[in-house]
Image (cartoon, rainbow, N blue to C red; front, side, top):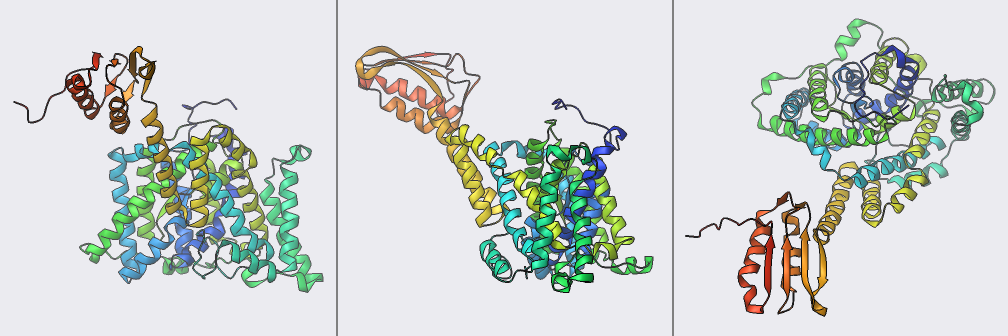
Length: 523
């Protein structure tokens, strides 16, 4: 399909249902264990993760500013949520903070704070995508081997069970389950073949669905004929069963509005609003880069949608939500075209909770691991590293630093480190590329002409001062700002100070297109 940054299909566009429904099914399969695992990691009721996943699909997708982003409970918020629930003492108090955080996000949307996402370097965003891919692979290998005493959804390097990404893999290999290995291997082969040209005619049926059904059937076979290979208990998906509307009502928890004056509640709400908004903006930016149609999402609209989603999540007993890169990338990789895919993922989540919890609880985690292993591989292909290397060291270095930082810490810390590296390189590049210079004062080739760039900011201040200070005596220098649209006040002040004092070194200075500056304190 041709690239069109302005093309925004209407919601529930029937022309794309053949792509969006299968993609929604795949995202549902990815989201289900993550919703449960993140709730467990957050110290919250398991059902709260599912509530947020449903709201992210059925509500946020309708209001979203992105065609391909998928919202739900986020692994990046688990530590914050766990600390907040512990600090506030009651889950109902935490839910009130989630509601207030949603109100803050709506306000941020109206204040057009979504533009913050435009200031994240491309190298950092691509590094984040690659790191997520690597983490998915590292975290799913234990499930593929049939051993992981930690829950699904723990995406930090140092896990809450005191293991790390690598030690968990070693444990999984040492305590592997042959049935899980067999199921994951067969499912992975199916997914690889499904992506090949030989299976092109079968691609109307989503490969991950085939892999999951195959995993269920294989486990039935193992139970019937090879009991030592059969999987049960912790090796299978675990979703709470709801047998009546009364049970559903008893599960839903409401926020306690009597705590509205609590300073701790407002502090947690502010923290959630800031962190969730940043994670959403990063995810939106990343998903836009994956979009084959190269559409540009409305980040302000997305913040408002997230705000509405978090208000509803808090009111119904759910966890806070963000746009989630794992689900968004799985959505893109599955061929989704519009927001309808996210809507169907929410619909499948709700239907599964109400209608078929028993069937879902038959799905081996090993078959889901194979699905996520493929998603991880697609995010961190060797070709991405090769392309970033060809783009030059200014792109490649922060790209690698971001990947390493995220893999060995967590998502938010890693992005912060990657941003610091990206900003440092931008500062260094700006410090050396603010002008074009003709002439060589050391060889008395005069005049030396310094032609300033279109934008000269305060970031160039130190290097401009150093360049002018290093001009030898008796130089003739022309500083040309006629092509500059903007020259920072600090830079103008340095230039004029240099001109005023140049006679001490017998330097002749000519200024072109350099305006005068107002001297603060001058009379």
